[in-house]
Image 1 (cartoon, rainbow, N blue to C red):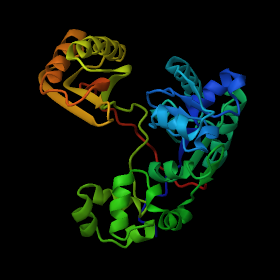
Image 2: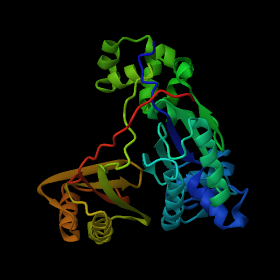
Image 3: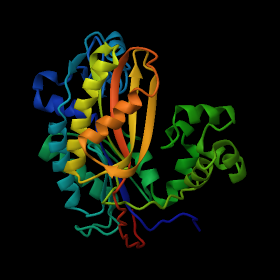
Image 4: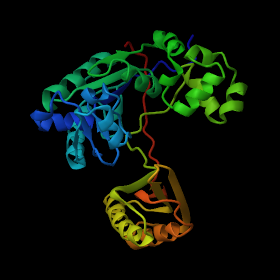
Length: 360
């Protein structure tokens, strides 16, 4: 008898190279060519890369200078987030034809709970195939999907047959799938944690499973319990249609590095105004302001202040960010500034999920 819950059908849909694919969709001349969204050959950071560019090692968060070095034929385009959001909303409408239990993670990926669905289809695998086919037929874009008994396994599975593929992990396949999985493929295990696990002799899910809970908690703190349970297929997090934002942020990367706090003040005022617009749009306020500073050597620094009251006003955001700016001297010229607001006044709304036995 399995210790994990086998009564749910969860789909994770992940668009393939979404930003780059939208650019290639809208501009046929870019199709089949190595493409980077964001950055430039002189500075900035790549936001997304087409699969043609990824073959050369170009990926998100890579500097534009390195990206061009890896791929001399690389084409840079400016991001158009309004367009990506427009397409994302159309994709969301397709999801909602099947279930109201849709939890977006970003513009290009979401979880769907189809345990009970609007089509009355008992097969989550067939629903995922139909959703992917509709996205392609109606929008001209490809998507990949993972299907399983919980969000964790579905997300890992969606990366298995990318691009334009899907993988189902049935209840009987969960344990063999997790035991054979390389530890770096576990969602939530980043590069630093992966390397630490390697040092402890943990290379696969089976290696992880053989470590007792006390051992994992000793070496990984609270995350140890998470690792202990997920490798056993236990992950009971529900698909939450009303996903609560933990923070709202705005940041700018500059064409030329800033060396004077006076110039930085000017940029921070613009960033604060943009952040205020976002907060007003969603009727959100918060108490903790964080200033993000990225220096010319790419080192990152954050400074935070928690206020005794909720704010969303530009002037208060700017005044607090300015205070944080002068908290200590700059160690170098600055290439990026950002302001984020957390400790928000949002309320958690729990989704009710009815669980039934089913066949994949």
